[in-house]
Image 1 (cartoon, rainbow, N blue to C red):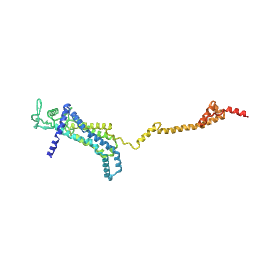
Image 2: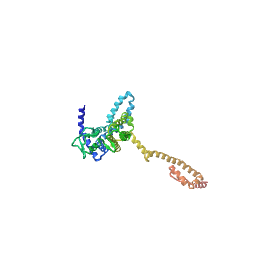
Image 3: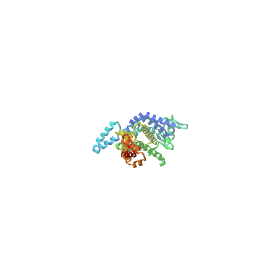
Image 4: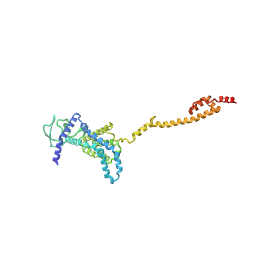
Length: 387
Protein backbone atom coordinates (compact mmCIF):
# COMPACT_ATOMS: atom_id res chain seq x y z
CA UNK A 1 0.00 0.00 0.00
CA UNK A 2 2.83 2.38 0.85
CA UNK A 3 4.48 1.73 -2.51
CA UNK A 4 1.21 2.47 -4.28
CA UNK A 5 0.83 5.73 -2.36
CA UNK A 6 4.40 6.68 -3.16
CA UNK A 7 3.79 5.98 -6.85
CA UNK A 8 0.69 8.19 -6.85
CA UNK A 9 2.62 10.90 -5.01
CA UNK A 10 5.44 10.81 -7.53
CA UNK A 11 2.97 11.31 -10.37
CA UNK A 12 1.67 14.52 -8.81
CA UNK A 13 5.07 15.82 -7.71
CA UNK A 14 5.49 18.09 -10.77
CA UNK A 15 2.06 19.63 -10.20
CA UNK A 16 2.73 20.18 -6.50
CA UNK A 17 6.11 21.79 -7.22
CA UNK A 18 4.58 24.03 -9.87
CA UNK A 19 1.82 25.28 -7.54
CA UNK A 20 4.34 25.79 -4.73
CA UNK A 21 6.61 27.83 -6.98
CA UNK A 22 3.71 29.98 -8.14
CA UNK A 23 2.77 30.58 -4.49
CA UNK A 24 6.39 31.46 -3.65
CA UNK A 25 6.49 33.90 -6.58
CA UNK A 26 3.30 35.62 -5.42
CA UNK A 27 4.73 35.81 -1.90
CA UNK A 28 7.84 37.53 -3.26
CA UNK A 29 5.57 40.24 -4.71
CA UNK A 30 3.44 40.67 -1.56
CA UNK A 31 5.16 39.08 1.47
CA UNK A 32 1.92 38.00 3.14
CA UNK A 33 0.74 34.40 3.20
CA UNK A 34 -3.03 35.14 3.11
CA UNK A 35 -2.53 37.65 0.28
CA UNK A 36 -0.38 35.18 -1.68
CA UNK A 37 -2.99 32.43 -1.27
CA UNK A 38 -5.73 34.89 -2.26
CA UNK A 39 -3.91 35.72 -5.50
CA UNK A 40 -3.30 32.02 -6.15
CA UNK A 41 -7.00 31.29 -5.57
CA UNK A 42 -7.96 33.97 -8.08
CA UNK A 43 -5.74 32.32 -10.67
CA UNK A 44 -7.23 28.89 -9.93
CA UNK A 45 -10.79 30.21 -10.12
CA UNK A 46 -10.03 31.87 -13.44
CA UNK A 47 -9.11 28.44 -14.79
CA UNK A 48 -12.26 26.74 -13.50
CA UNK A 49 -14.65 29.56 -14.45
CA UNK A 50 -16.03 27.60 -17.47
CA UNK A 51 -16.97 24.81 -15.06
CA UNK A 52 -18.56 27.36 -12.74
CA UNK A 53 -20.65 28.77 -15.60
CA UNK A 54 -21.75 25.30 -16.65
CA UNK A 55 -22.62 24.40 -13.08
CA UNK A 56 -24.66 27.59 -12.61
CA UNK A 57 -26.57 26.97 -15.83
CA UNK A 58 -27.31 23.45 -14.68
CA UNK A 59 -28.61 24.68 -11.33
CA UNK A 60 -30.79 27.28 -13.05
CA UNK A 61 -32.26 24.63 -15.35
CA UNK A 62 -32.87 22.41 -12.34
CA UNK A 63 -34.77 25.13 -10.54
CA UNK A 64 -36.80 25.92 -13.65
CA UNK A 65 -38.14 22.36 -13.46
CA UNK A 66 -39.48 22.90 -9.95
CA UNK A 67 -43.16 23.21 -11.03
CA UNK A 68 -42.97 20.00 -13.07
CA UNK A 69 -41.33 18.18 -10.20
CA UNK A 70 -44.05 19.41 -7.87
CA UNK A 71 -46.71 18.01 -10.19
CA UNK A 72 -45.01 14.61 -10.22
CA UNK A 73 -44.86 14.59 -6.44
CA UNK A 74 -48.55 15.38 -6.24
CA UNK A 75 -49.36 12.68 -8.79
CA UNK A 76 -47.30 9.92 -7.18
CA UNK A 77 -47.98 10.39 -3.50
CA UNK A 78 -47.38 7.73 -0.89
CA UNK A 79 -44.63 5.23 -0.19
CA UNK A 80 -46.13 2.71 -2.61
CA UNK A 81 -45.47 5.10 -5.51
CA UNK A 82 -41.93 6.04 -4.45
CA UNK A 83 -40.25 3.87 -7.08
CA UNK A 84 -42.41 5.21 -9.89
CA UNK A 85 -41.86 8.76 -8.67
CA UNK A 86 -38.10 8.31 -8.80
CA UNK A 87 -38.35 6.85 -12.30
CA UNK A 88 -40.45 9.78 -13.50
CA UNK A 89 -38.05 12.23 -11.87
CA UNK A 90 -35.06 10.66 -13.60
CA UNK A 91 -36.95 10.69 -16.89
CA UNK A 92 -37.63 14.40 -16.39
CA UNK A 93 -33.96 15.09 -15.63
CA UNK A 94 -32.86 13.13 -18.67
CA UNK A 95 -35.37 14.85 -20.94
CA UNK A 96 -34.19 18.31 -19.95
CA UNK A 97 -30.51 17.26 -19.60
CA UNK A 98 -30.02 18.43 -16.03
CA UNK A 99 -28.06 16.94 -13.16
CA UNK A 100 -29.94 16.59 -9.86
CA UNK A 101 -26.67 16.96 -7.95
CA UNK A 102 -25.95 20.33 -9.56
CA UNK A 103 -26.71 22.18 -6.33
CA UNK A 104 -23.62 20.73 -4.67
CA UNK A 105 -21.38 20.83 -7.74
CA UNK A 106 -19.90 24.30 -7.03
CA UNK A 107 -18.63 23.11 -3.67
CA UNK A 108 -17.36 19.84 -5.10
CA UNK A 109 -15.46 21.73 -7.79
CA UNK A 110 -13.28 23.19 -5.05
CA UNK A 111 -12.00 19.81 -3.92
CA UNK A 112 -9.33 19.05 -6.59
CA UNK A 113 -7.64 22.41 -6.14
CA UNK A 114 -8.06 22.12 -2.37
CA UNK A 115 -6.34 18.73 -2.29
CA UNK A 116 -3.40 20.04 -4.31
CA UNK A 117 -3.09 23.18 -2.19
CA UNK A 118 -3.47 21.11 0.98
CA UNK A 119 -0.52 18.95 0.04
CA UNK A 120 1.49 22.02 -0.97
CA UNK A 121 0.88 23.70 2.40
CA UNK A 122 1.84 20.50 4.22
CA UNK A 123 5.01 20.37 2.12
CA UNK A 124 6.19 23.94 2.65
CA UNK A 125 5.46 23.77 6.41
CA UNK A 126 7.15 20.41 6.87
CA UNK A 127 9.16 20.19 10.11
CA UNK A 128 11.63 17.76 11.66
CA UNK A 129 12.79 17.19 15.23
CA UNK A 130 16.04 17.63 17.03
CA UNK A 131 18.96 15.73 15.50
CA UNK A 132 17.38 15.34 12.06
CA UNK A 133 19.44 16.11 8.99
CA UNK A 134 18.54 19.36 7.24
CA UNK A 135 19.18 20.01 3.49
CA UNK A 136 20.65 23.41 4.32
CA UNK A 137 22.89 25.10 6.80
CA UNK A 138 22.13 28.37 8.57
CA UNK A 139 25.09 30.75 8.34
CA UNK A 140 25.66 34.37 9.30
CA UNK A 141 24.87 35.45 5.74
CA UNK A 142 21.67 33.36 5.58
CA UNK A 143 20.78 29.89 4.37
CA UNK A 144 23.36 27.83 2.50
CA UNK A 145 21.56 25.13 0.47
CA UNK A 146 24.82 23.62 -0.71
CA UNK A 147 25.55 21.90 2.56
CA UNK A 148 23.66 19.95 5.20
CA UNK A 149 23.36 20.39 8.94
CA UNK A 150 21.73 18.93 12.01
CA UNK A 151 18.63 20.29 13.68
CA UNK A 152 19.71 21.62 17.05
CA UNK A 153 16.33 22.88 18.31
CA UNK A 154 13.09 21.12 19.22
CA UNK A 155 11.58 21.83 15.81
CA UNK A 156 13.27 22.81 12.56
CA UNK A 157 11.70 23.69 9.23
CA UNK A 158 12.34 21.51 6.25
CA UNK A 159 10.26 23.05 3.43
CA UNK A 160 9.53 20.97 0.37
CA UNK A 161 8.41 21.80 -3.18
CA UNK A 162 9.91 25.33 -3.16
CA UNK A 163 13.39 26.44 -4.02
CA UNK A 164 15.77 27.40 -1.18
CA UNK A 165 16.53 30.61 -3.04
CA UNK A 166 13.00 31.99 -2.61
CA UNK A 167 11.96 34.53 -0.01
CA UNK A 168 9.23 32.21 1.25
CA UNK A 169 11.76 29.45 1.94
CA UNK A 170 13.94 31.77 4.03
CA UNK A 171 10.98 33.16 5.99
CA UNK A 172 9.58 29.70 6.75
CA UNK A 173 12.97 28.47 7.96
CA UNK A 174 13.39 31.56 10.14
CA UNK A 175 9.93 30.98 11.65
CA UNK A 176 10.63 27.27 12.28
CA UNK A 177 7.95 26.07 9.87
CA UNK A 178 5.26 28.57 10.80
CA UNK A 179 3.39 30.82 8.36
CA UNK A 180 3.43 34.02 10.38
CA UNK A 181 1.43 36.98 9.10
CA UNK A 182 -0.13 39.73 11.19
CA UNK A 183 0.84 37.95 14.39
CA UNK A 184 -1.11 34.82 13.38
CA UNK A 185 0.31 31.43 12.45
CA UNK A 186 -1.62 30.42 9.34
CA UNK A 187 -0.05 26.97 9.47
CA UNK A 188 -2.01 26.25 12.66
CA UNK A 189 -5.66 25.14 12.76
CA UNK A 190 -8.67 25.88 14.94
CA UNK A 191 -8.42 22.55 16.78
CA UNK A 192 -4.68 22.97 17.22
CA UNK A 193 -2.91 24.24 20.32
CA UNK A 194 -3.54 27.89 21.23
CA UNK A 195 -2.23 29.80 24.20
CA UNK A 196 -5.58 31.51 24.84
CA UNK A 197 -9.10 31.95 23.52
CA UNK A 198 -8.15 35.32 22.08
CA UNK A 199 -5.45 33.66 19.99
CA UNK A 200 -7.95 31.03 18.77
CA UNK A 201 -10.65 33.61 17.92
CA UNK A 202 -9.28 34.54 14.45
CA UNK A 203 -9.17 30.85 13.52
CA UNK A 204 -12.84 30.50 14.50
CA UNK A 205 -13.74 33.58 12.42
CA UNK A 206 -12.11 32.04 9.34
CA UNK A 207 -14.05 28.78 9.77
CA UNK A 208 -17.38 30.59 10.26
CA UNK A 209 -16.70 32.81 7.25
CA UNK A 210 -15.92 29.80 5.05
CA UNK A 211 -19.12 27.98 6.09
CA UNK A 212 -21.25 31.15 5.94
CA UNK A 213 -20.20 32.04 2.41
CA UNK A 214 -21.11 28.59 1.16
CA UNK A 215 -24.57 28.97 2.68
CA UNK A 216 -24.84 32.42 1.13
CA UNK A 217 -23.96 31.04 -2.30
CA UNK A 218 -26.79 28.50 -2.11
CA UNK A 219 -29.21 31.00 -0.58
CA UNK A 220 -28.65 33.55 -3.35
CA UNK A 221 -29.47 30.95 -5.98
CA UNK A 222 -32.48 29.48 -4.14
CA UNK A 223 -33.90 32.96 -3.53
CA UNK A 224 -34.47 33.30 -7.27
CA UNK A 225 -36.86 30.36 -7.19
CA UNK A 226 -38.31 29.59 -3.72
CA UNK A 227 -40.35 26.71 -5.17
CA UNK A 228 -37.23 24.73 -6.01
CA UNK A 229 -36.58 23.69 -2.41
CA UNK A 230 -40.13 22.35 -1.92
CA UNK A 231 -40.08 20.63 -5.31
CA UNK A 232 -36.77 18.85 -4.68
CA UNK A 233 -36.38 18.30 -0.92
CA UNK A 234 -33.50 15.83 -1.39
CA UNK A 235 -31.34 18.40 -3.18
CA UNK A 236 -32.39 21.06 -0.67
CA UNK A 237 -31.31 18.83 2.24
CA UNK A 238 -28.01 18.10 0.49
CA UNK A 239 -27.37 21.82 0.01
CA UNK A 240 -28.24 22.42 3.66
CA UNK A 241 -25.85 19.89 5.15
CA UNK A 242 -23.00 20.01 2.65
CA UNK A 243 -21.44 23.21 4.13
CA UNK A 244 -21.59 21.60 7.56
CA UNK A 245 -19.73 18.57 6.23
CA UNK A 246 -17.09 20.90 4.82
CA UNK A 247 -17.09 22.67 8.17
CA UNK A 248 -15.55 19.59 9.81
CA UNK A 249 -12.76 19.81 7.24
CA UNK A 250 -12.21 23.49 8.01
CA UNK A 251 -11.74 22.68 11.70
CA UNK A 252 -8.82 20.36 11.01
CA UNK A 253 -6.83 22.09 8.28
CA UNK A 254 -4.35 24.94 8.34
CA UNK A 255 -5.94 28.36 8.56
CA UNK A 256 -4.34 29.34 5.28
CA UNK A 257 -6.55 26.74 3.55
CA UNK A 258 -9.63 28.40 5.01
CA UNK A 259 -8.48 31.55 3.24
CA UNK A 260 -8.64 29.58 0.00
CA UNK A 261 -12.22 28.44 0.71
CA UNK A 262 -13.34 31.96 1.67
CA UNK A 263 -11.91 33.58 -1.46
CA UNK A 264 -13.14 30.83 -3.80
CA UNK A 265 -16.69 31.00 -2.40
CA UNK A 266 -16.71 34.79 -2.71
CA UNK A 267 -15.60 34.55 -6.33
CA UNK A 268 -18.32 31.98 -7.08
CA UNK A 269 -20.98 34.24 -5.56
CA UNK A 270 -19.73 37.17 -7.64
CA UNK A 271 -19.63 35.04 -10.80
CA UNK A 272 -23.12 33.76 -10.14
CA UNK A 273 -24.50 37.29 -9.71
CA UNK A 274 -22.84 38.49 -12.93
CA UNK A 275 -24.25 35.52 -14.88
CA UNK A 276 -27.81 36.24 -13.77
CA UNK A 277 -27.70 40.03 -13.90
CA UNK A 278 -26.29 40.08 -17.43
CA UNK A 279 -28.63 37.39 -18.66
CA UNK A 280 -25.88 34.91 -19.50
CA UNK A 281 -27.83 32.43 -17.40
CA UNK A 282 -31.64 32.94 -17.45
CA UNK A 283 -32.98 33.73 -14.02
CA UNK A 284 -34.46 30.56 -12.53
CA UNK A 285 -36.87 32.63 -10.45
CA UNK A 286 -38.68 33.99 -13.51
CA UNK A 287 -41.58 31.64 -14.40
CA UNK A 288 -42.27 31.00 -18.07
CA UNK A 289 -45.06 33.18 -19.52
CA UNK A 290 -48.45 31.54 -19.13
CA UNK A 291 -50.73 30.96 -22.08
CA UNK A 292 -52.65 34.10 -22.94
CA UNK A 293 -50.55 36.26 -20.65
CA UNK A 294 -49.58 38.52 -23.54
CA UNK A 295 -53.20 38.95 -24.59
CA UNK A 296 -54.19 39.75 -21.05
CA UNK A 297 -51.50 42.38 -20.91
CA UNK A 298 -52.78 43.92 -24.13
CA UNK A 299 -56.31 43.94 -22.79
CA UNK A 300 -55.11 45.79 -19.74
CA UNK A 301 -53.41 48.38 -21.91
CA UNK A 302 -56.47 48.70 -24.15
CA UNK A 303 -58.70 49.23 -21.16
CA UNK A 304 -56.38 51.91 -19.87
CA UNK A 305 -55.72 53.74 -23.16
CA UNK A 306 -58.54 55.73 -24.86
CA UNK A 307 -59.46 54.50 -28.32
CA UNK A 308 -59.15 50.80 -27.42
CA UNK A 309 -61.63 48.31 -26.07
CA UNK A 310 -61.90 50.42 -22.94
CA UNK A 311 -62.80 53.39 -25.10
CA UNK A 312 -65.58 51.45 -26.73
CA UNK A 313 -67.07 50.77 -23.34
CA UNK A 314 -66.68 54.42 -22.43
CA UNK A 315 -68.21 55.41 -25.73
CA UNK A 316 -71.18 53.21 -25.11
CA UNK A 317 -71.59 54.73 -21.71
CA UNK A 318 -70.91 58.25 -22.98
CA UNK A 319 -73.01 57.69 -26.10
CA UNK A 320 -75.81 56.32 -24.02
CA UNK A 321 -75.65 59.35 -21.82
CA UNK A 322 -75.56 61.66 -24.81
CA UNK A 323 -78.33 59.82 -26.56
CA UNK A 324 -80.30 59.85 -23.38
CA UNK A 325 -79.86 63.56 -23.04
CA UNK A 326 -80.88 64.07 -26.65
CA UNK A 327 -83.83 61.78 -26.25
CA UNK A 328 -84.76 63.53 -23.10
CA UNK A 329 -84.20 66.86 -24.80
CA UNK A 330 -86.51 65.99 -27.70
CA UNK A 331 -89.69 65.76 -25.71
CA UNK A 332 -88.53 68.57 -23.50
CA UNK A 333 -88.04 70.82 -26.52
CA UNK A 334 -91.39 69.75 -27.95
CA UNK A 335 -93.11 70.37 -24.66
CA UNK A 336 -91.55 73.80 -24.43
CA UNK A 337 -92.57 74.56 -28.01
CA UNK A 338 -96.13 73.49 -27.31
CA UNK A 339 -96.17 75.56 -24.15
CA UNK A 340 -94.86 78.54 -26.14
CA UNK A 341 -97.50 78.00 -28.84
CA UNK A 342 -100.44 77.68 -26.46
CA UNK A 343 -99.83 80.55 -24.12
CA UNK A 344 -97.74 83.47 -23.04
CA UNK A 345 -96.14 81.47 -20.26
CA UNK A 346 -93.67 79.87 -22.68
CA UNK A 347 -92.84 83.24 -24.19
CA UNK A 348 -92.38 84.80 -20.78
CA UNK A 349 -90.16 81.93 -19.68
CA UNK A 350 -87.97 82.08 -22.78
CA UNK A 351 -87.79 85.80 -22.84
CA UNK A 352 -89.35 86.58 -26.32
CA UNK A 353 -89.30 85.04 -29.74
CA UNK A 354 -90.15 81.51 -28.66
CA UNK A 355 -90.61 80.57 -32.23
CA UNK A 356 -87.04 81.44 -33.02
CA UNK A 357 -85.67 79.62 -30.02
CA UNK A 358 -87.89 76.80 -28.87
CA UNK A 359 -89.52 76.39 -32.22
CA UNK A 360 -86.21 76.03 -33.96
CA UNK A 361 -84.83 73.87 -31.23
CA UNK A 362 -87.85 71.60 -31.43
CA UNK A 363 -87.57 71.38 -35.18
CA UNK A 364 -83.84 70.61 -35.01
CA UNK A 365 -84.34 68.04 -32.32
CA UNK A 366 -87.03 66.25 -34.28
CA UNK A 367 -85.14 66.44 -37.54
CA UNK A 368 -87.81 68.58 -39.34
CA UNK A 369 -87.25 71.33 -41.92
CA UNK A 370 -86.89 73.92 -39.19
CA UNK A 371 -89.85 76.15 -40.28
CA UNK A 372 -90.82 78.69 -37.67
CA UNK A 373 -94.18 78.27 -35.94
CA UNK A 374 -96.48 81.36 -36.16
CA UNK A 375 -96.32 83.92 -33.40
CA UNK A 376 -99.33 83.69 -31.00
CA UNK A 377 -100.28 87.37 -31.58
CA UNK A 378 -100.24 87.01 -35.39
CA UNK A 379 -102.43 83.96 -35.06
CA UNK A 380 -104.86 85.96 -32.93
CA UNK A 381 -105.10 88.70 -35.56
CA UNK A 382 -105.89 86.21 -38.33
CA UNK A 383 -108.64 84.69 -36.19
CA UNK A 384 -110.24 88.14 -35.54
CA UNK A 385 -110.16 89.00 -39.25
CA UNK A 386 -111.82 85.70 -40.07
CA UNK A 387 -114.65 86.55 -37.70
